[in-house]
Length: 230
Image 1 (cartoon, rainbow, N blue to C red):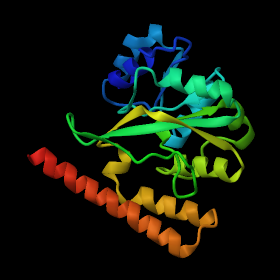
Image 2: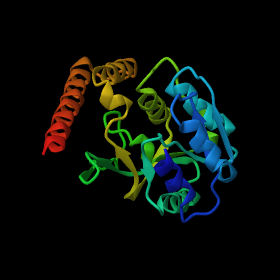
Image 3: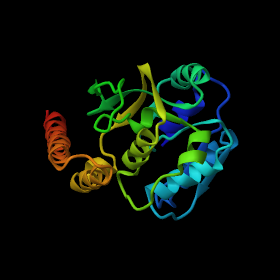
Image 4: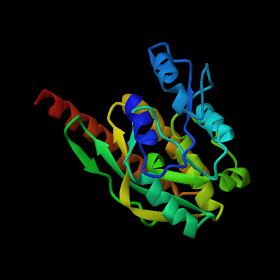
């Protein structure tokens, strides 16, 4: 978590409200938050109903016009918010998103394939996505029925609702290996498959997409284990 906090607090863009929602962690998270308390706009550590509930608490607590959500193990590039705000000022009614760097280990990383053209099967990377507060007000919050793929459902809902997406051609965020979707490989993709089914994706394309992403995840985990051994 300190790396995520430092990446937000160290942004070159100065006007940022930092909000932390912790689900009552039993480790030293609360002590870390107390140490950062004077630099945070708001923080809370209490039991919640899952990731979607935590996301929603953060969105509802935010007072700003543009909202980005960052998981505890991820972090932003130093100029990420400045780049996003520059684009958002020109397109204030659109979602702004950029590229994502995925860290396989402490020293090995790769930039995920770009999502310049957003589609049902090519949604933006959530850690590198910033959503205007007005869009949340119009289209709703994250669906708590989903434990893992609530970001997929939310972004797909915006896409189908006619919301525009504007791409920033830079790496905005970093995602580290070992998150909840990595530890539990199958369930996130089952949820995504159901989300795409409800959205009207053809059964054949849905199956192919599910097989592709699930297979890629298993391959990635295998490569990570191989790299760790080496």
